[in-house]
Image (cartoon, rainbow, N blue to C red; front, top):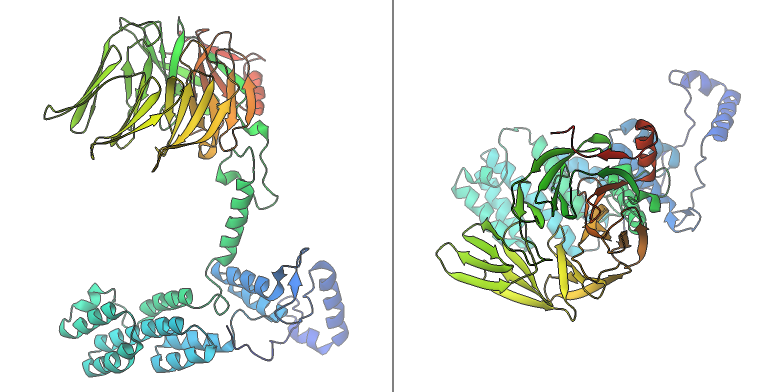
Length: 555
């Protein structure tokens, strides 16, 4: 599309210190000397060869576009003097004189001249011209009404707006303004601004979004390009596991394996028997664990990766199998033993429904007494919004929408021992007895999107979890006493962490701390895993030893 540009660029001149321009102009030798001095220390403007001149090693960046985007960024940041100086020294104007004239006429409320100047810009897309004209004439119409020039407003509507033949529903709304004096305020017009400056500034921002990028550089275009570049770097970072606040423009981003929690920072020893389950709260401030010692413990996560015993809850008559945090981070406990056939009763409530579990048989009722489902199960989960119940039994998983009373089954060829639900409720991590973990997408038609292998599972219930930045990693316990970590997308096994002396039954990745992982084991301990440099810090604070916590001094 064609754009009319100025034939003569602004004059280039070397700028000396403020207040010395007059004396410098009298002595050309001084001017030349200063120009050479500045040229040695600053990047010299490239010789103008038109809009096709390129810069950069690959020759794909057009110099004129590059300079205009930088100029636009300077003005957006409030550096008006710097923006103007860049335009002058580069000889590349941000906008042509026609575009500048157009924008000034809009701000001055010279609507007829604005429409005429719009056609001089050289925009080839007719619909764009009509859309821009419509907004300007709409503003003209409303301002005429504001000045109580009803006849002139009606003439603008009939003879200028309607002939554009676009946005007719809006035309009808404008027509109703003539009848109702309160209608303009309902359409977003402020009569408190008598000069119309505020509403015209808003209008100009709308017009700039409609105009082609070659005519008006989009607002914050440089920021958008930089953010895209960071997105690409983050997406290509295999082991990315850091917050966006840690990304820098000074160098290309690349995480190493050292960003994955792989070092034991702390060993928690408050349980007196096998630890079967653990889970961080949604805010990452607490960790709950369940054990065959018939207790559940609430641990508090302090600053510096230190985990301390907060509460020890005793009184159950059977081993505590699992612990669950409600959406408001209130813990729920289930004293049910899946591995040795012990039985007890658990009950939990949903809005308009409640469920009982006894001997691993789930009965779900509506409040009116209607029995929805009775199933023998091995694992279950509920989405955060309470709308979907996910139930596992043998080789199948039931996806139950309790509001729509719609159900769907996921079938596996091997026995399912446990599963985990992703934070966004769109994926299931399914542990199988054949020593595989399958990642299922449960949006639309359920399907397996990735598989993970390498851990050991033959006799016990081993649990896995999502974790890290964007839940881009998969972690799992294993019967060989190790913690395994895979890349979620590729299924590549990247770490096997030794340390426990018994089967690792469960793992949990802190949702608020990308670098904290917890594991529960038959060796009666919980290990807190972190980064290598944090291990060194902990050792310095504890005379070179890993910190052990048995809960005796923390009530």
